Length: 150
Image (cartoon, rainbow, N blue to C red):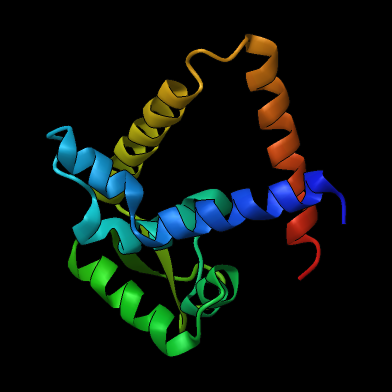
């Protein structure tokens, strides 16, 4: 294994650990932005639907998020209760309900994206433009390749 690969592994472990500790929520609270903890996990559900660009089912969300169906069902139920998602009849199969983000869910998600981008921009503020562009390109390529291993 090359030193570069080992360095990537260490960085990925650090990212995973920081996400488990909800580092962005802590930063938000420290900066008086209220934090996103109460709905952070639920926003993962909304975000997954928004990224798909179409209505989804609990089964599809379960697979996309890598969680079992009972957990996905509980997350969806909470997101519906919080007003982040709504269930609508499937236009192709009226017996089936699909999930779509509500305006409130999309607004929370937009706020979260703006906050994340601001934090990431701050971290990279002293990087040359070429380094930021290369990092974005390479990290995206890494994530795409990693996703293909499934």
